[in-house]
Length: 434
Ligand code: ACO
Image 1 (cartoon, rainbow, N blue to C red):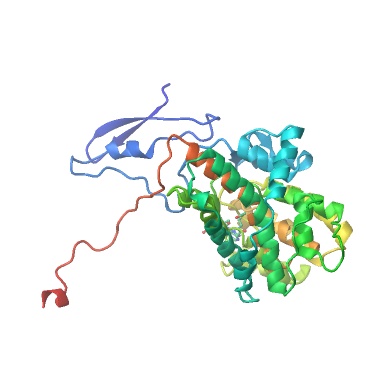
Image 2: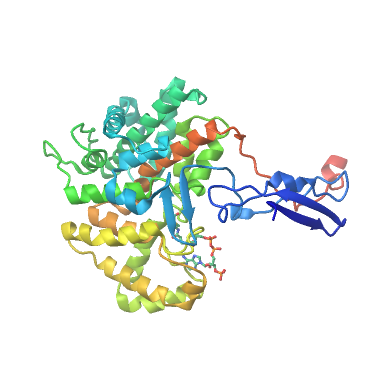
């Protein structure tokens, strides 16, 4: 057996042998180089074969050592550690360190990493001015996209993306400042004064303080909610080459700075098919309103009138492991916040859908967004903040991927091909001919 694939071009009868490369697992990620297809030509004038893949359903755009995801088996690992283990045993900031550096930190490294991030949490006072320029009805995710991009203008050295030391500094800044921007965006929309970072609190505890602190001297986050949100941040920290991550890589591949690359990631995450889905799940559950209306809604989904939001995934064709962890965490949250009737509707909807052939045949299972919205709502986050809550932890994954891309010896600017199906050159048009 040889590690090659043979292709016969029936137009010419010619035979081509293309080498197969492997990643860590021989049965997952075997690939041929797309450029090898270009040798397959009818004649010398022929450009050669392209692979055609709208939506990149079967195209590997890079090799990566960060996240492994096997959607058929419902496996998600960061740097080799199962997501279940990390969620149970490690803080989000240690997971961010793992994603960035490849290893979990020892206690000293963990402390110094957390200190650096703590140190960079403040925003330049000018940022409040352009934050104030947004209308009070502005969606906080729109504010986040704009303000994170604008941060790029505050740090002239940010253009030095080839310099490893500068990259590390920008990684600290971005992981540190995203929660501050997010909380400021929320408080602006509520007409509340901005709450500054509190150095005594953890990464998540401080975020909760900047969000919800009112007139009290010191905000004390509920320890259960603080821990659950920390776990949720871990679950959202990375997810290999999804829409937002590939946007960050794509923008970063032009050597644009990481602030604008992260802004592109936020923009991609804003869409309802990606980070906006949990917002849609909540709207859907409210629209359904009661358990008895579920069968009627399922029929509408099957008719193709609406989608069951929070169900289905491009990669997971088995249960999303993050959804399982969130489903288990939900009762802990409700033990603190009181019950949420939408959870009962969600559980029943999941039960009915998972017994229905329409969903079973299409391998449609709950994804991470199915339960996250209900949990966020119970914690007091308004719906518009849901995609923002996704963007905060995902920043660590985006930046790890961005850093990996810049250090990759195969690095090139992102530039997909197309198959042109428009007009051939036309006759001179009437105006030009006159
Ligand atoms: N409800 C009903 N039917 C669905 C759903 C859904 N949520 N998702 C997919 N399908 C059906 C499609 O209609 C299609 O059926 P068909 O073969 O009869 O035409 C089939 O399943 C395949 O669907 P695609 O759209 O081809 O799947 P794709 O991989 O392109 O889409 C996506 C994945 C966008 C996530 C899709 O499942 C979806 O729209 N889900 C709802 C939105 C959502 O929850 N997004 C969050 C994803 S997780 C994240 O981004 C963090």
